[in-house]
Structures are given as structure tokens and as C-alpha cells.
Amino acid sequence: MRLVIISVVFLLLVGCDKGYQPKPKAFLALNYSEPIYKKIQLPCPYQFEINNQVQVKASRTNTPCWVDLEYPLLNGTIFITYKQVNNNLEKLLIDAQKLPLQHTIKADEIEGDTYINVENKAYGTFYQVRGDAASQAQFYLTDSVNHFVTGSIYFKAQPNFDSIVPAADYLSNDIRHIMETMKWATIQE
Image 1 (cartoon, rainbow, N blue to C red):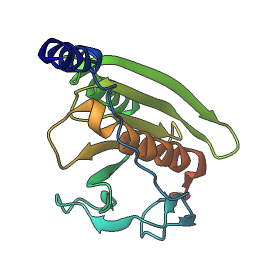
Image 2: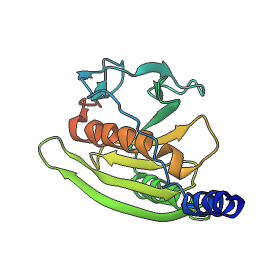
Image 3: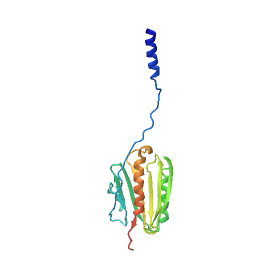
Image 4: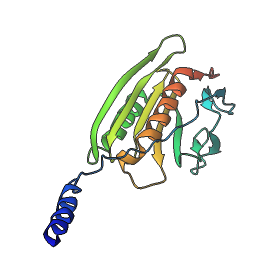
């Protein structure tokens, strides 16, 4: 009888062993509200539409027409800079194209997409940066005659690309919308 009980307990212990099974990787499910865009009113020679979740603040540099588009819920900011073109378009273009290259040490990939909007006279490039770089997207736009705008995304957190991908993609889409809605004011000479 004792042998039967020991055999049954042994079989139950051995039979219940399912073995080790690793848990699948979990992905953070971040859902952001669908953006609602509105025109931004600035005393600057450019206008565009912004997400209604943005808080528009003057740049900390106190440079005219430089603005910070802060996203409190995402802990991120799109920094917008403006410069007037004054026989310096080539230098502005070189500087704007160098900016994404500063992230090549940490970036896995930097992809540039040319942007042309003949109707609004807006020409430039959108840079998508993949990897643990400090900025996940940057752009520049110009009318090639008077105006030059740059923008870049930064988060108030140490870069960890896997963690910020949803937020970076959300802000990248907003940058694309800024580029698509950019309109220039006429400069009086």
C-alpha cells in the first residue's frame, strides 16, 4: 500500500511539471487621442497649424519667432527656429543638413524625405531618426528667398528608443502636419 501511495504522489509531481516557458515580451499599449489641428497665431512671418494639445511658449533663447511647442502629456517638445534668408541660403541649408548628422553616433538609421509644396512655396526635408538618439525627428523648410524654419523633437527623458517610439511617431506626424500647413508672410523690403 505504501508503495502505491508513493508511486501515485511521484506520478502526480512528475505529471504536473509543465516545464519552464518564458513569457512573451510585452509591449506598452499607448493610445493617443486623434489630433485636432488649429492655426497658430504668432507675430512672425510664418503660420502653420498645431495640435490642440500643444502649449505654445516663447523659446528660452528669447530669439524672435523661435517657439517651443510643448506636449505635456508626452513629455516632449518640438523646437521651432526661424531665420530670415539674407544671401545666406546655402549656409542655412548646410547647417540644417548637419543637424541630423550630429545624432549618427546613437542613431541606428537616419532617413531624409524631400518635401516640396509649390502652392505654399515651401521646400525642405524631413529627417526621421531611429535609435537612441536625442532627437527622433527634424525638419527644415524654406521658400528659398526670404524664410527659413527648422524644427526638432526632444523628450525630457534619457533616450531609449523602444520606450518612446509611440510618442516619437505621434510628434513626427505633427511635424509633417506643420510642414504641410506652413504659409509664409510677405516681407516688405
